[in-house]
Image (cartoon, rainbow, N blue to C red):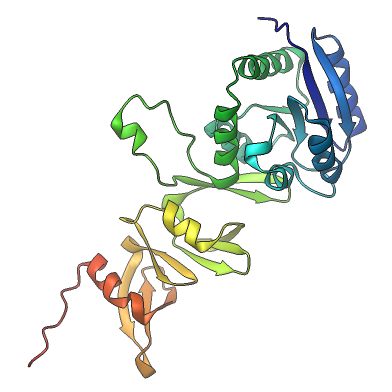
Length: 274
């Protein structure tokens, strides 16, 4: 399939040879015009806003801003169709594959490039950029991209199943069922999985809304715990409460959330004498 409509393309990569290779390949494509070629995330943001390309080849690791930071600053709703470009990293690739986002792994061959470009061109021609934006959201937030609403069960699948954690320009996939608890850390949230921690930029309220309430509960304004890991609920001196997880971690519980936590844990409330 060859589109009759000209496709405006922006290249954002800090490696001159990588930019040159993409430019050479794109110049051999019909109805493609390169509207810009930049070498930093900051320049990518400016160029996307001023040039309004139909498609951007976006390197993940760039000075100024990473590729994912570029997407966050522009906003998913305002991003053109995006093909991520990355050096080999199995976790990044897993994240992109799970979100059905197209990507190129350096060094890529001509056939892989042609397949990726053709898919992007087809989606642009069919005006399916909305689907691409949902996939970008999946990469940024770790959510599973919504499938076609063929069944009520599929439509009801609304909770996070994995986090895509950006680490120095790379993306690591952290399954939700591996998370023991989450603690607010300034503008970030810190995911605790066993003896490891990962930072994601997402507010606690958003996480509380997107995590399955049958599995997770916000026990404090700055703490979310996985319920099946709760071992004991303790009352401390001064009337404060905390939970101890099966891992040994001890976390604060707000007094206002204690009764709800007891209910969720199946604790029978004490009957008080008149």
